[in-house]
Length: 121
Image (tube, rainbow, N blue to C red):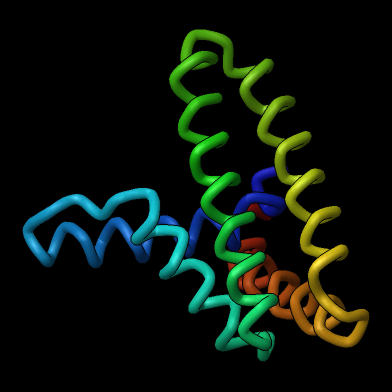
């Protein structure tokens, strides 16, 4: 299940690291924009898709933050809710991206998680 959250988590870490070096904590809007830009580097997006993916990332980050706050004392429920959130995210991404783009998106996620999986064995 940890592999499922690797790509969005990696993007989130990069955003947070960038914000820490700038001396201020990035807003959810900033983090959503950065994450969307990272996706757009792997999967070329048109302008309408960029806006929709950014909105989806903003919802995802906001929901993740909310779940972590509400379920901090229940790790099992948190994992389950985060998995469901990730499933919804993937479903909505599939509705935004064209089939070829979705294939490229999934491939880039698989490549990212393959790098992380060698330490988990």
